Image (cartoon, rainbow, N blue to C red; front, side, top):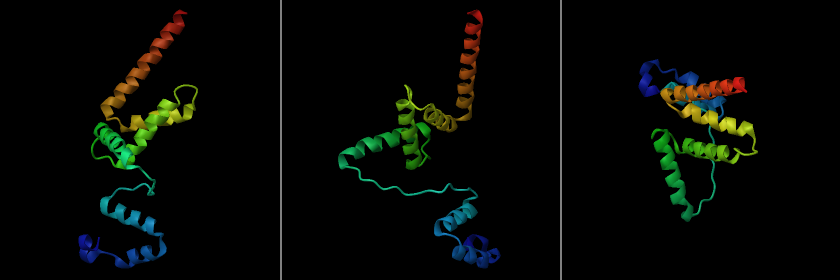
Length: 136
């Protein structure tokens, strides 16, 4: 930021923030200042993966990245893989809240034209249910 702002850089304010804020909060504040985007708090998760599992995991994350757009992070791809699993696991006699959450996450990923098509299809099915119910 000092290079970017030059003489206008307010080092006293940033030094005070660095001393007072937790390290992760300060890092997010700097990131927001540089990019203009608010970053969601994050956490690194470590777990053991066997070498034999790596090809499946890589293939799944690569396929997900292609579906969502190559600019998506591996963490985001993993979240969508998990959401897909949860949606499938809760179709029959499962928790409808988890299914709703999974569907909502998918909807947010869709480009605007596909979101509109999705809503159109739902509205069309609701309309057909009303017609069938009225005839009965």
